[in-house]
Structures are given as structure tokens and as C-alpha cells.
Length: 259
Image 1: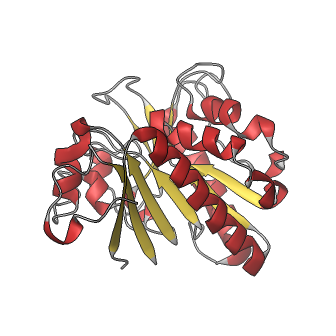
Image 2: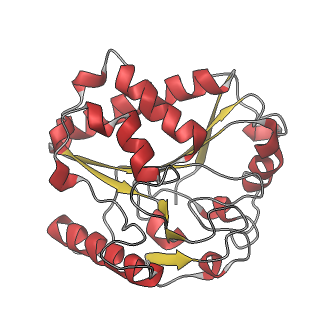
């Protein structure tokens, strides 16, 4: 399992810009080696800001956008045109502005769509999509995502896996429906920690003093049931990309210089 590498930026704006630059480098390197790349997108303020920074980066055109597979780590189970949808926000921030291949974009189903109001059916369908894509190259149930982006909540949730919720205990399925989330909207679809750990690299991106306690706990060995973000690790590398406020309670080996 990978170690955890921490990079700290001065503020959320610089964090988003630096993460976008890091993502360009990673995707270009993967495409140079293999021709294609895959990325799992996240929502939230910083996650969407990263996509906006990427869109406006001078290096944006270095990426072959037609040869990237796009997935989501979680999604709010709301109608497709709901402002809460991570997919909708990602399209507005980036995907509608670069020459992506729509056949390589794999959003989670929306409420009221193909599966009606059944988030379990939506989760099962997304698990089938992951298995189909993984089988093309890896003969596995989940793709080995090149980069999986995650945010986190102040109580330590990541994707839509909340502390001590059923999803935090899941060790078989790759995708689950999540109900009664303590943060609205209450119904969601999420990758599980076993699926997240299929990624080659996992990047946890978060900002703000409200996240500082959870960051410090996660990096000091907290359990993943009580603090799900602690279980979000990549096969090769796990990066914690923070602003100064989110890193303010780190000490010892996890108190790095500013990035």
C-alpha cells in the first residue's frame, strides 16, 4: 500500500491552481506512456475549482481530452438538471469546454432517469459499467484509475462514505446507494473504499480550518469506519493536497514545507 504524501499551499485558490497543474502533468505523462488515461472526478468547492483552473490553464491543450475516461467518486441522487449534481457542475466547469469523447464519460445515473427513484439500481448499474471498463484491460471488477480525486468533510467523510454508516463497512461491492446522509441531499450513490483503493493514485484535496482535525486524525492512523477518508489510499501513491488552514494541526512527519 502506498505511503501518504502531503503538500500544503497557502490558500484555497493556490491549492486549486497547483492541483490543476499537478493533474495536467500526471495525465500527460500517463498518455505519453499508454495513450489513454482515466480520472475519477469529485465535487465540492475545491474539487470544482480545480476543474475551472484546469480549463483556464495554458497547459490545458497538452492533454488529449479525447483519450481520457471520466468517472465520478460519488453523486447526489437528484434529477439530472439539479444544481447539486456533481456531473452538472463538472460539465460547466470543464467538460463542456474541452474536446472530450462523450462515449468516455461515465456519469452515475440521476434520479427520475432510467432507474426512476431507485438508488440501489443506479448503484448496481454503475458497478456494471466499472466492471465492463475494467475487463477491457485489467480483467478485474474495477478499473485501475490513474488518478482518483476526493474531497472530504469536516467529520471525515469522503465520496459519500460517512463515519460509521453502512457504506463505511462495505467490503464487497464497488458501488453502493447511500441513504440518510447527515449532509444534504440525503440520498446518493458512491464508490466504496475497496473500489477507491483500486486507483493507482488517490488525491485527497481539501481546504479550511474546519477540516484540520479530521486531516490530522486521518494522517495519524485513525480507523476508516470512524473516519472514512483515512481508508482512501492508492495502490502506488496517496497525496494529501491541503491549504495552510487544513494542515494547521499536523505535526511531526506530516508537517511539510509549503508547496
